[in-house]
Length: 92
Figure 1 (cartoon, helix red, strand yellow):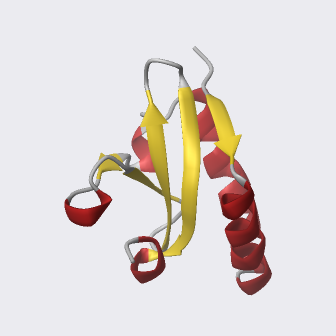
Figure 2 (figure 1 turned 90 degrees about the vertical axis):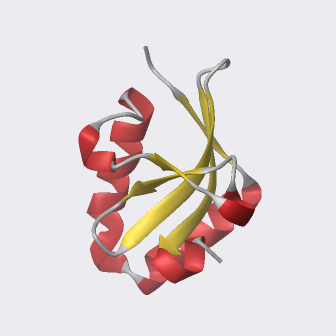
C-alpha cells in the first residue's frame, strides 16, 4: 500500500529553509521521503509517537541529527508533514 505525502505550504517553507542550511542532507532527505511514501513503518525511519504538547504527532529520522515531525492519518493512508529540522527545532 502506497501512502500519500501531504506537503503543506508551511512545511514547504520550512523544508526549503532546512535544505538551504543543510545542503549535505539533501540526498538523505529525499531517501527519507521515498521510504515514508512506500512504508512509514520502515525500521530505518525510526517512526515513533510523540508525547506531551506534541501528542498526536509522530516523528521519523532523516539521520541521527535531523527529524521530520508528521501527522499519520491511517484511515486515509495520508502522511501530513509538519516540521523538519534538528531535534530541538522540531520538538519546539
